[in-house]
Length: 68
Image (cartoon, rainbow, N blue to C red; front, side, top):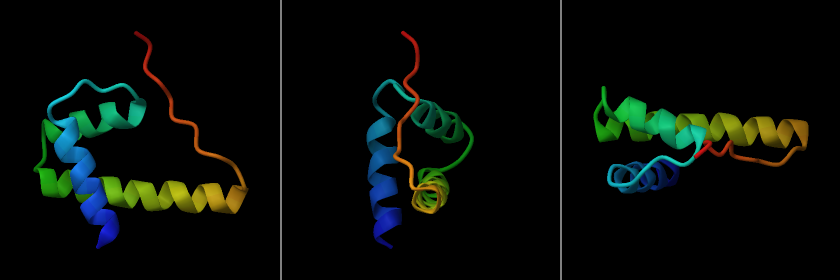
């Protein structure tokens, strides 16, 4: 539940600002097609999969910044 609530906050805030990372661009593209709730669930799912991969591989998260 907490992952969903956090993801929903991120999605809601991103509706009113410019995307600066690949993940934010992905969210904005989904928002053009889906509801906020559906996008929040997708983001929570993606966050869990990313966290699992980071823990499994022992690496750190480095977001891909979009070129200006």
